[in-house]
Image (cartoon, rainbow, N blue to C red):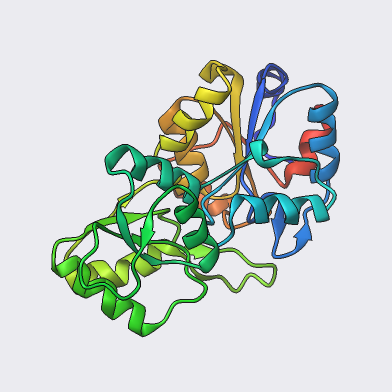
Length: 271
C-alpha cells in the first residue's frame, strides 16, 4: 500500500519528462531486481521519457553498471548512467587536469579516473588529492597512507557521503561516508563531497538534458542523499521503502519527499 499518494502528486508525476533513478535499494538489492522496475523502465522507453540511473556507489564503473543492468533485463546505454565516480572526475577536471591521486576505492574506480586523464599514485609520498570512495578493497594500510598524505596537505575529495550500503539481508555495510569519518577523526580534515545530495550531478545531467526542474523527478530510498538532492535542486522527490528509509525515518527527517511509496512498482499504476 502506498503512502501520501494523492491525485495532485499523480498529476505532477504524469508531467515529469526526466526520471533520475537511484540504484542500490531502489532498482535492486545486491543482484536481485526489485519487482516492477523493468516494467517501469520499459514504459518510460515506450513513451520516450528519458531516464538516468544516478548512483553514489562508485565501486563499479559506468560500463559495469550498464552490463549489470542489461543482464537484469533493463534496457540502457552508457548515456543512461551517471555515477559519483564520473561526477568526481568531471569536478576534478575543472579544478586541475591530469592531477595526481591517491584513491581509497576499487580498481574499477581507479580505471575510470585514469580514463579521464588522472594519474593514480599508489606509492608516491606526494599527491594533489586523496579520493575517498566506497572501497570494497579497503585495507588498514590504505587508511594509514591516506592519513599521511592528508597531513602533508593533499586535497581531500569524497565521491559520496553515504554511511552504509543497503543489502538484501538488511545487514548494511560501511560506505564512503563511514570511511571518511575514520579519516576525519584521525586527521581533522573534512572532504569535499561530490555525489548526492550535492547538486553537481544534476548540473552535469541538465547539460545533456535541458529539462526544467519542475519536470524532473528523482526516485530513491535514502533521505539524506536522494531526497536531499531533490530538495536542493528543486525537483520532485519520490522515496521508496524498498531500501534504507522507513516511515519512521521520514517522520524524523528534515528532508520530506513529495511522495512515499512501497517500491518503484507503484509507479506502474500511474504510467
